Amino acid sequence: MVAEVTKPFIAWALFAAFATQTVSAQQPPTQKELILWQKLEATIQDEDRKLDGVLGVAILDFSTGRTFFLNADEVLPTASSIKIAILAELYHQAQQGKLKLTGVALPGAKNVPSTWYKTHTP
Image 1 (cartoon, helix red, strand yellow):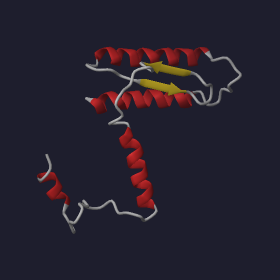
Image 2 (tube, helix red, strand yellow):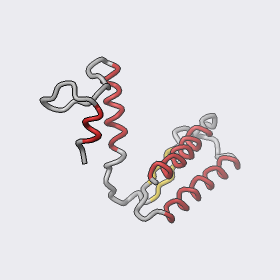
Image 3 (cartoon, helix red, strand yellow):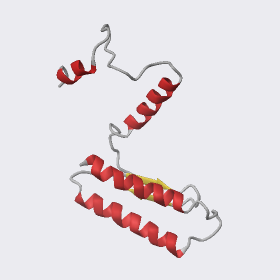
Image 4 (cartoon, one colour):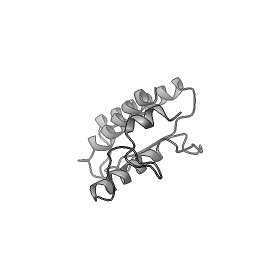
């Protein structure tokens, strides 16, 4: 369910953020831009109503400075979003040759096949 909800939000957010890159910050938004933002906001609010939980969203269009916030003052756990930063650093260190992304490394274990991890973890 999370992946199904997250993908459309990412697509919409990226579209809204990059669709207006040619507009300078001094120019007023075009009618098309306003319509796209309204659709984006409506879609996010609709998904929020469907969820059994609290959704927090923050969008900043870097080219115009326009923002959208939903539940911006709520304190939400970052358990899922922190994974993005962890994976980015993991891939960065792999590119630098500091670690390998093959197999599973457990403290004190040597050459543990990934099938062991699948069968020995809760």
